Image (cartoon, rainbow, N blue to C red; front, side, top):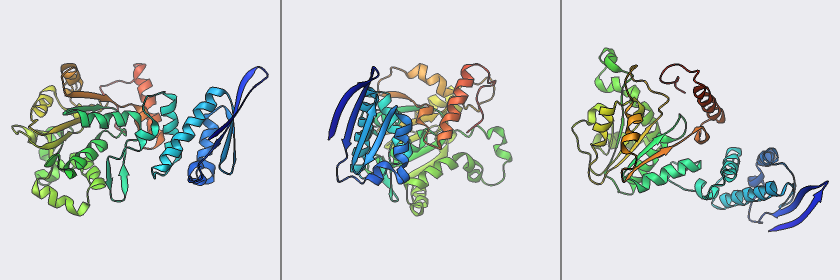
Length: 340
């Protein structure tokens, strides 16, 4: 419920609204511990905010007040779904509202992909939700973006969800071990021990989503397979959810080989960051080439994630954006940038 009093002060339009928060909503959850969330609102809007009980009075520019009201409405909706709020969540909702997207922020942030070990895995940005929706709608989905945008993590969550719902019989996770090159044979240990460092990030994500005690059994049964890209040559992968990670380090020939492994009842997700290519100088990236080849092909989708979709520490997003600006000025030599 909202009370309204519009007026003009010194020729500048000003609106005064009072938002009445439903009694079922805990004001501490809404405003944050120590009014942490309220402080985000005060910094974000050119308006005065006053709280008395469950009434929040807003005064200032009409457009800003209208946006603040919508923000409060979205936060209340999120709380009603049982989600907790954080300052980061408040800022993400505000970012989506300022972008004037057709999707409601509460719908984006409340989409539950997978519940595992007492927590839920959900998209945290609009582009992430569109990426997840694309995986549902297409047989092959490419996700291209910088480090920390959830490309691999969300793909893994969708893979585990598909396995649990019996839409597929197995999950296949792969990466090119390009960093090893010819030096692979000089590393100590068995072949498995040699390639393990290049596949470790996939294992780490898997441990977040599946009971760690069950993983050895799933690996032994072939229900989950983690293998270097070269190990997939010559195979036809049916009834599988297949993820190719770090795809910027494939050659065009390797990318074609991988995509043609697609069998009946399977789904493929390819992830990569074209700014972090480790191929030898002069080699073309299969991920860069494939978009020119497959754009417009039915049932194939390309999704772009940006620094705005980074879900690690907020500083990571600012670092990625700063590097993008630096690259745009043509001041960064070489094919890629140091890894984050």
